[in-house]
Length: 96
Image (cartoon, rainbow, N blue to C red):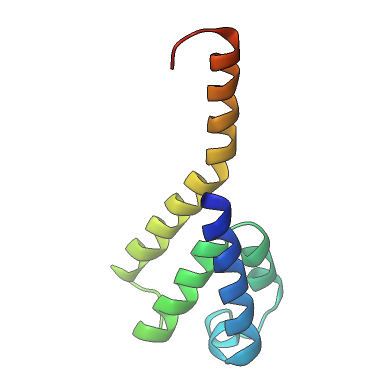
C-alpha cells in the first residue's frame, strides 16, 4: 500500500509541476530539487509545494507539515524492509 501512495504522490507532483507554476514558485524556478523530490521524497516535495502555495512560504509552524511529510516518506521507504524482516522471521519459525 505504501508503494501506491508514493506512486500517486509522484504522479500528482509531476502533473502539478507540468500544469501549474506552483512547483517553480516553491523551488524558485530550479529543477534539481523538484526532480530529487519526485525520486526520493515525493510526499515531502508535494506537501512543501502545497504549504508554499497556501501560506505564501514555508515559515514557522508550516514547517510542521513538511516534517510530518518527511516522516511519512521515511515510513513508506522502510515498509518493504520491515516486511522482508517479518517474512524472514516467519520462515525461520520464530513468532512475530
